[in-house]
Image (tube, rainbow, N blue to C red; front, side, top):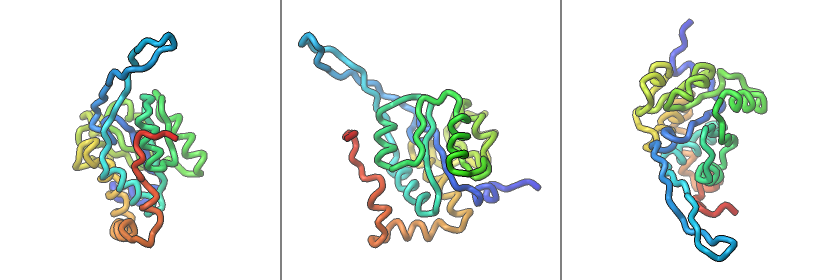
Length: 205
């Protein structure tokens, strides 16, 4: 029996995202910053910056309210990813992953989940090994053609412009939970939404 995208989405318990090009638009800004050297001189170090969509952050709140766990798996290592993950209180944060299935298998084992219960959102060919194995493979609207061709669902929005939110809402809609999760997210009596994405930004402490 051929499963529809909705059939696949209904089984999902864990949603995992690539970062660059998925939770961001793929642009990586490198800024020179002055730094004091041991000899008293002023040197320079490079600082990386990325931009994230607030819509995706709100979507991760909805995912939690729908009983799912959320994480990121990225090849690059960046302080900005650690900061954003902390603000969103992500359950899974894997950086420096050239072969992402290793992280996916580790997450599945830790959570007692099957690969069919995991969704992955990607944009480039490095994401294909994971997308070929998980239960629900999502490509963002600006993904490479090879990635879109193997996805079960392609988001209407580009990476960094709400694509992550699209994926989460599709899953929740398939489960019949979307409207209830939206109402819960705006309920002032619900402590979870207020505790997530609190936006402390650059303070790692």
